[in-house]
Amino acid sequence: MTKEYLTVDEAAAFLKTTKKYIYKMVFDRKLPCYKPTGGRLYFDPDELEKFIRNGRKATRAELQDRATGLLN
Image (cartoon, rainbow, N blue to C red):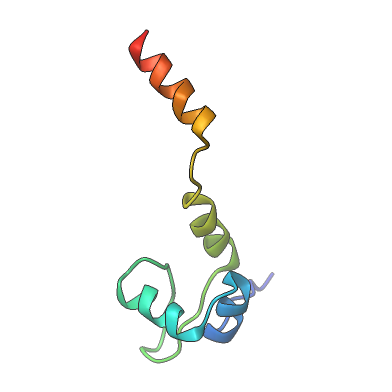
C-alpha cells in the first residue's frame, strides 16, 4: 500500500491557509514535513490533522473543572 503525501498546495488547502504561511510554519519548525531530496516538501495528512487537534483550546467550563480539581 502506498501512502499519499500532500504537496505544499494541497497542505495549504487542507489547512485552509496560504502557501506562504505553510512555508513560514515549516521554517519555524512548527509544522511536520518531509523533504526527501532537499527540494520539494511533502506532508502526511494524518500528521496535519494531529497538528490541528493539538491546537485545541479548552472551554471556560473545562478550565473551571481543572481549577476546581486542583484546589480540592
